[in-house]
Length: 116
Image 1 (cartoon, rainbow, N blue to C red):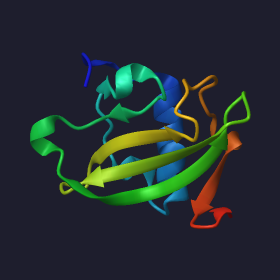
Image 2 (cartoon, helix red, strand yellow):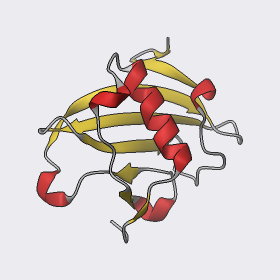
Image 3 (cartoon, helix red, strand yellow):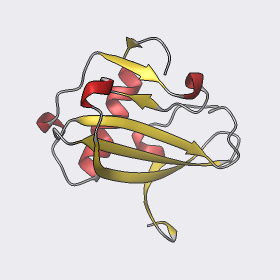
Image 4 (tube, rainbow, N blue to C red):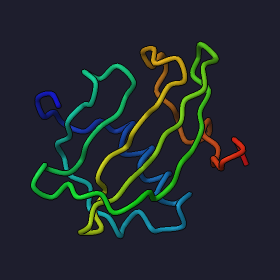
């Protein structure tokens, strides 16, 4: 992981939307003000939980997004064993840099067959 930084408003907006898509209430989760970027911020993945509290406890929701270069991106919001947001993981199909940060209106629920 890289150096901690302040969480951006666009990240908070997306996380709150993903929590709602996962059937939960955003106000049930207190989001930290500081995050860590994964992969040197190439794909957009961020970690919300310090390593000592980072035990994975499951996915909240998975969505798909088509980046501005038309490459599909899967975004997974996860929680830890303390029922806190663990991370928001972006996986771009071709592993390239994220071009445009997703907004809630541009994501769709994901299942094993793709978009719902």
